[in-house]
Length: 187
Image 1 (cartoon, rainbow, N blue to C red):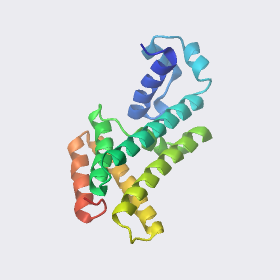
Image 2 (cartoon, one colour):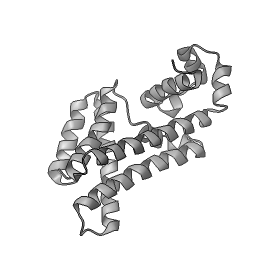
Image 3 (cartoon, rainbow, N blue to C red):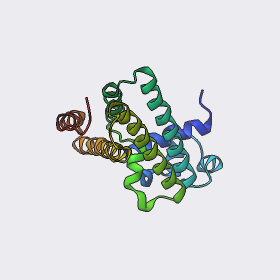
């Protein structure tokens, strides 16, 4: 059985993926977990502490998942297909968004500690994408590869956002297929 802190994080993550940082409420979270608000504050003194921990863990999970993808099959086209599948799974989970991309949209309203973790998440994704692209484009300029990696990260996040707004994961599939046809995403 999960301890209280882990249960709080589980519920907070689901809430933040559906409603963003602004949708996190210690009172509502306490109700969902079945504890008093003071228990939430015991584990996370501020909403910023909770948000930073959520984003930090999300980034760690992403790093591990991405490295597992490359370890399983280093072929760039396969890696990129599995990469886009990660974002699709969030949509399949009650039309949720990538946690850190959702938080990034709320940038101006985030405490600096949360902003820092959101930036770290983006850096993890872009660096991984650049390594995958470099493997398939060995003669390309490293700066150009990094720009393309950033474009892919932004494009996939945008596809997820559009699909969420339509409430239709097939929209995501269509947009990703269009990116592949246009050559933005190899494979």
